[in-house]
Length: 591
Image (cartoon, rainbow, N blue to C red; front, side, top):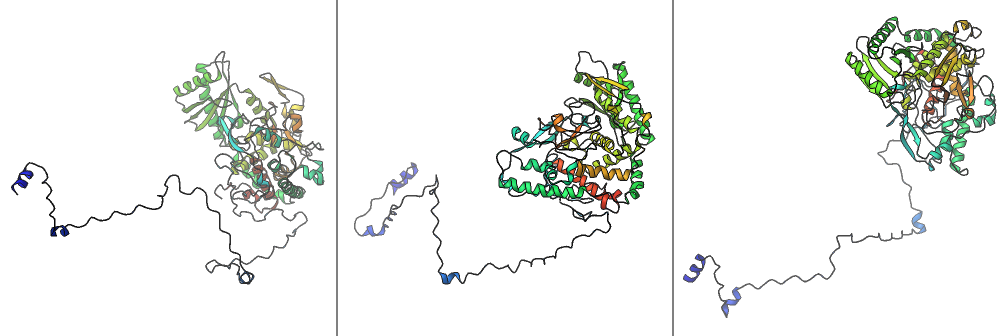
């Protein structure tokens, strides 16, 4: 014991005690036996122990007597009963000789499902619609797309690209550097889709002679639908299905194209004229506009005393509304300096003179300086030496002085386009300038004609811009009674305008040309295929820059949107009891 105590004090463990032999051994517990080694291999954790699924077991075959007792699935108790089937609606009968059975759903104001791709992610994302399902309603969203399943078998690669903006309207084009558009990834395939068929006969009035012939019906198929179905190689079943749908839709368009204008259309003229008067800019608006121009001229003359200020665009061509901003072109000699350098210097001068929100946008096709004036409340875009816009502005202003029906028609069409969301070039639709040219060309094609072709007459005004001669007859005071033989009211003309663009214009072949006062062929302009981002699906020739297609931003989806809106407008004016309200109902982006 003493030795154990000494060992504990030294910090060591006590020595083991000897085990006594004899009877004390049974007091020590026997050691536990070790577990036996496993007979199977351990499971493999990585990689999985089984990489190949075992073959499925063969299903047990039922004996004939068992098959007799198989019961088909029944409707669950919790599922509500199906609605009773409605009997088919009786065919519509014409209440009068001028009304034909409507080839479209007759309910106006009924909410429509918005086309999911209309402006999804961009302007018209997947903005496609089946040409055979065109919905007409006084408001709400547009019908969605329902492509045939067979045609969906061969899809092409699609991609969003940035489309370079080109100056369409002096006033509309300089507000952004680029716009978005829709492109089919493969350029070669895209050009193949835009190939046109041989041109058919056309009459001098711009209307196709063969609208009542079956072969021309096939040739006037919906442009966008044809492109959806076109492709290389021989005909496949999916192509045949799509072509059948196109022929059916074309025959529907043919039937609607033969509808005559309602006899009471003139009763809506007072309402349309009242709307036109409300859209015209007031004298106060013009006074504030002049105040801004004077202030701007004073600031510019400090730095460039020889510069000339030209108003252009809607604020100067007589087609501007009370909401139009001011567009100014500075004509000056810039010497060796670049346009961008001059614009940056101009922005500094305007900031020093306390103009608000001055910003130089140098990446646009036509570089501009944007600014606003707190005194007048106007915004202003200023460009350098954009003289084509100045020449176009004077041409449109002279056309507006010939017949007041041009101003009335253009104001109403522009107002309609803004409310219906088809007046946005950066989303693939048309500019205000393009709509004005459409109105001018339309009045040039009426019988009797309402407007002449000024560029085909004796040249009394000439302006040379970058080697291009801008010349036409500008003594319009001699043409005040040119369209006096045509007695059509603004209500008749508005219906005829929408009806023409919905059913009579040949989108596959025709280019409208104010320069010639007629329609010309795409083959003549070499606009039969897509070139870069210029698609040439809906072609509107610029009067002076004749190589410029104002409809080049329209793609395969937005051309359907435009044609659907033209058809809706024609239907509202033809059938609605109060078209002055229904026609201008804003497009519902929520439905």
